[in-house]
Image (cartoon, rainbow, N blue to C red; front, side, top):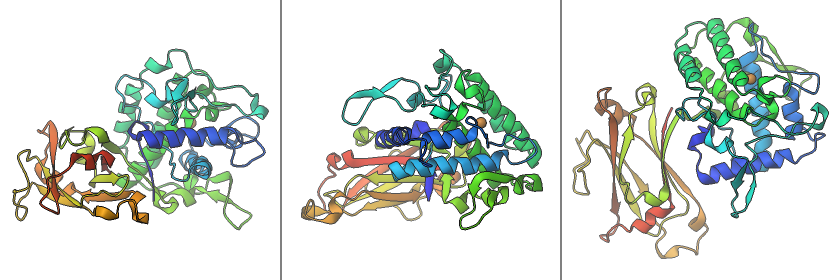
Length: 392
Ligand SMILES: [Cu+2]
């Protein structure tokens, strides 16, 4: 299952992949159906313009199909890439997402190169050149639109919900001035796709929580130019109602602990976010880039900063569970498992929902490492780990 994350939550390596994938499709010729020029060109210029911004049905479904088209092209360059979303309020008063702000960035090999997320090449058939944004875009606030979008999430009926979301989405476009503010050129700015992934995420969340009946005008809307496989007909809105049918989901909220400070950050203090209460499931995801030398169990205690290796587990309502990392021992470097990343997930929802209420300002997570032998925990082990919290 593809997981689309908040662009501000991507790890350094995921962000490199994303930039490299965009640069990869930028460099393909317009004659290639997987090129950025071709796909971005489907939205507006060159004619015909296929996008659906209709208030009467098809806007949300058409753009869902469109995002998959671009995401699939990115994945031909970098197979693990997923489209991230731009949650307008994730960066209070900081305007557009950080990775999109600067004309250059430092690539994996340390060279300063053009930032593919800063501007996109406009297809030759659409006039060529590069996209532009208003000069002060990095400080323009979108906070008010995030607030409107969030309150729209409780609208009970589809037409009213989709109409309001469409309007908020349009204001985001217009606030950029430049290329993003016109249908004909908007999709050539890479931020278009992060913006629309957020629209799609909001819709997916609405479908999962409110799920008002979808009218036939949306279900029957024709999604040209996206063909149904092995047929002569186009997809319709009905084909794109469930994100799970297309094998992706959104990670609404995240909190990443940079790996190098993990040993000192064993006690995590996480500010309470509305998602903590709204999320159905809250999970800790631990990624270890390669297998550890030392086998390690990590016990997770919620709101019990004093818990240690002696703390009892059975009947302890603060104990959320544990991760077991199976170490390589002396086989390290001599086995195909040695370089394989491990990804472990621990569902802490029940413990968090039981212990945390709206009066709390933060959650503490106490991660207690226990080694399988009696040897003390070697913090070097944690240098290869990332821990992330996701709420769905
Ligand atoms: Cu749009």
